[in-house]
Length: 193
Image (tube, rainbow, N blue to C red; front, side):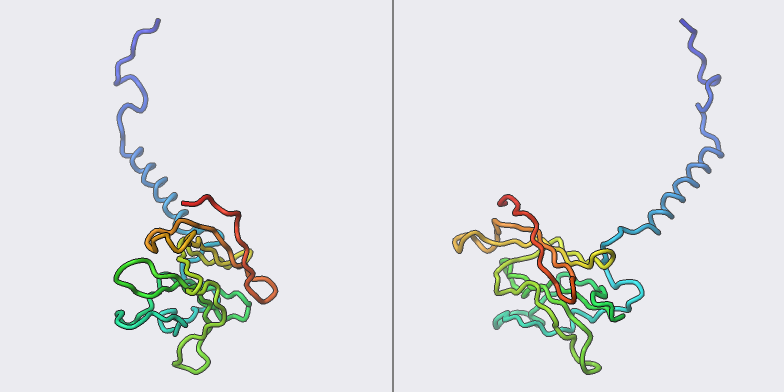
């Protein structure tokens, strides 16, 4: 058995300025790399190099929100831009629903292009999810790199008896841009929630 060495005799038992400097440099390098590196396909805003898409808040959505609701009656929950058709003008995809004092109104997902007339509202060119279907959406993402797609989790109800606050069905779906149109690609059905 060897005798225990005193703490002063062991290497690295005291921190010195060089140790703190090396730690600071390593931490700065990690932060710099994480600031530059981005996920390969998720966009939270306008796509690089394609300009900005239309302002989702300025569009007129085909939704009947009913009387007596705060104006504007439609709430834009999320929006992201990407140039799906390679025309060098980004489109905006908007997730919207009516503002309501209680409950969870159904969602709509719309693809918008720039206004026809300068100063006019953005034009809806595609309805991916109509509020008339009675579903809500969450986990909304728009990807431009690789396969151009829009993804969301749709929440619904198994029967009219299920309270509108508490969806009991969910399904992840993707709309992929293929040959000039959006194709719906449902994922396998998940368990009921």
